[in-house]
Each structure stands twice: as structure tokens, then as C-alpha cells.
Length: 456
Ligand SMILES: Cc1cc2nc3c(=O)[nH]c(=O)nc-3n(C[C@H](O)[C@H](O)[C@H](O)COP(=O)(O)OP(=O)(O)OC[C@H]3O[C@@H](n4cnc5c(N)ncnc54)[C@H](O)[C@@H]3O)c2cc1C
Image (cartoon, rainbow, N blue to C red; front, side):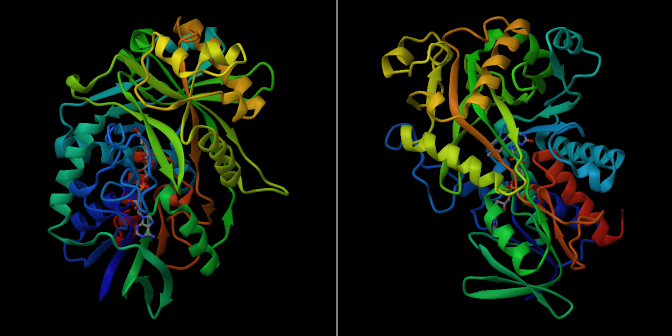
């Protein structure tokens, strides 16, 4: 088959590029190839009863399928250039913000109309943070919540499927240059297109590297973020999360002058496993539905590590650290803050006696055997710094889950149109290394679609 545009990957990047293409040129022949399943058939086998921890399915239902890694996420769409990616470096800050706002308007008109847009603008927390050696980053955030996010995705799919050919459970193995376009190869066949948009996210990182190698697209190493997920009683952070929902706070450590930052805050949420290429790490999300809210709030504390010479495989470094926790705990480790600072492991008994009830079944252990000292020291310092603005954060019973790792794709060399050195071949979303979030990935999809249709 020959298509006008083939999109590889049905995460937010792929979905929003298809949506924009379809809206501006309804006659375009568009196909999306996705290695995962349609939304309604995505189900992680962990049921908490028969299957309690990740069993490393060949295609992870959390990371793959319609909606991509974002499908069961908390659906926090941050509108900011301060974090979430460096899209602005390619397309400019104003354009990036305009596109994120546009994405927000589509989410709102597809089921998100009753959700709240939070903003750090004009809040007193900026000053309070500064007074305590913390920096609060600027952002607006639309919190869809896992449940509404799912509804929005369902509505987008219903609209898209009328015009776009979807091929689920079809992993693209190879992309080749063909006469006047590109050929994508999958088990049992191939299809061609004039323009090809690759949007394979973090789960497609290894494959993306191979494509760049095959097509001689230069790449640069990116960073890896390592740390823990903190779980505390939500009352400790309510005064912040009620106003801001998600606050991105940065702390510069006294000891090493490293930056430690909060990431992915989930008020009244749950901690979950994440499987990236067979390595089990930790993540979190929360629901908009009041009946699904828990008594806890969770967020990650992360430190970025960037390697250059002679070692530059940042992701391999992160994977090795995460593998250590998998080796010691069979998956994710959990430790009370009090046990960590006393230099002892947590045990089942100590966790059971804790006043904070864990929302994820993880193995009690010792995170100091896993995380490098420098990272762990920074995290401990930041927990004490956060205690100054949210007293109780540094309580003995505060729970730490590890390892939380944010892997970033190698950054592919792209021009201001997110186009590779091969005309008509675009790389967008987290797979490009340029974005690391729902809003940036979606905005990159809209941007490329507008470039293809000449509506920039
Ligand atoms: C649990 C969790 C919670 C998160 N919460 C948030 C949040 O609240 N806010 C936020 O901003 N970000 C969040 N994120 C990150 C966010 O989901 C990603 O930044 C975003 O989904 C990236 O979109 P994408 O389209 O670039 O890639 P993805 O969403 O990863 O989609 C890529 C798709 O490509 C498919 N694919 C890969 N390789 C191939 C191939 N060879 N052939 C065919 N298909 C392929 C994959 O199956 C996948 O479906 C969360 C992530 C996780 C895992």
C-alpha cells in the first residue's frame, strides 16, 4: 500500500500528528502502525491477587498501544518550556507554548472540559521555596487524571478511526528509503509513504537508535535521571497540591551542588511499577474520580546524570542501577526514610508498622545498596529541605521506592522542522530525545503535521 503519511507509534506524538493532518487535509491517506493493542484491549496483568508484580510481558501494556506510555498516566499536561523537553530549542518558545495550549484545547473539547488548569503564576509558594533554598519552576498544568485521560483518548480514537488506517500489534522492524519516500517493514509485509513520522517514545528507544544508525542520522547521547519515589500522607503536601497540583521544585545540594528535583507529583495517588525494556522501575499516578483517591501523595526526587567521554551510554548506566534493585528485590525496593538515614534495611515488619501505608507492593530493602552515594545524599538533603516547606516530609515513616529512572532517547539530529537529514522523514515525541512529556510530545506532533500540510 502507498500512503501519503505513515506514522509509527500511537502515543500522544503520533495521535496528535494524525489528528492535525486529518483536520487540515481530510483527504490525506494516513496510516498508523503501533506495536501495542487498541486502547480497550490494553490491560496490565498485575491484578494484585494472582499476579502481584511485573511479569515482563513481551509488549508492555502500560507503555504500548493506543495512547502510548501516556494512556494510563496521570494525564498531567504541563504548559511550560521550563521542563518536559526542549522542543522550544527547535521551534521557538512562543510557538511551543501556543502548540501546548492548542493541544490542551483539544483535550478539553474531547472530554476534559470539567478538569482544572492549575498555575504557579502569582502564588506565594515561589517566595516560600526561595526562602528555603528551593526553586519553584513556572508552569500551568491541566490535570486530566487517569480516568479522564482514558476518556479523551477514546474520543480521539473514535474520530481518528474514520479517516486513519490503524494497524495494531504491528511492530515496524525497519524503515527504508524508497523511490520518492519511505518503506516501513513489519512481519509479513511492507508499506510505502511519501512522508514518514516516527514517534516511538521511550519504549522504542533501542529501535530508534538502530534506525538512526541504518539511515546515518547523527545522534547525541542524552541524560538519565535517577532517584526514588517518595510516598507520604497527602495531608503533608495538601497545602501545595491543592493550589498547584503539580509543583516542580528544584534543590541545589550543599554537598555536591547537584540539582535534585521533584517530578510527577500525584496527590492522593498510587505508586506503580513501570517496565522499560524488561527493567522494572517505579512511577506513579492518580485519578480524578474522588472514589479512587488514596490517603497518600507521591512524587519522584530525581538527579540527572549526563555522560560524554569516554563513556556516553547514559541509559545503560541507569539500566544497570535499576537492574541492581531488580536483583535485590525482584523488582522495586521500598524503604522507610528513618531506616535509610539509620543505615539499616527496611523489613516487612518495619513497613507493616509504618504509619504510611504503601500503595505498591514492593520488596522491603536498602536503597543505599542500589543508588550511588552522591545521588542518595542529594535526595536525603532535599527531603530535609522539603520538610521546611511541608513539615512531615522527613518523617521516619516516609516511604521511598526505588529505583525511579527516567530514560531519555539519544537525541537525533533534527532541523527546525523536526525533520531528519532525509527530507520527509520526521522524528517526534520522546523517541526523538527532544520531548519528555505528554504536552511536548503532542505539540511536536501538531507541529510536524502543520509543516507537512504547509499550515505552519
Ligand atoms: C506511568 C507513566 C506516567 C506518566 N505520567 C505523565 C504525566 O502525568 N505527564 C506527562 O507529561 N508525562 C507523563 N508520562 C510520560 C508520557 O507518557 C510520555 O512523555 C509521552 O507518552 C510520550 O509520548 P510519545 O508519543 O512520544 O511516546 P509514547 O507515548 O511512548 O508512544 C510511543 C508508541 O510507539 C509504539 N512503538 C514503539 N516502537 C514501535 C515500533 N517499532 N513499531 C510500532 N510501534 C512502536 C509504542 O508501543 C508506543 O505506543 C508518564 C509515563 C508513564 C509511563
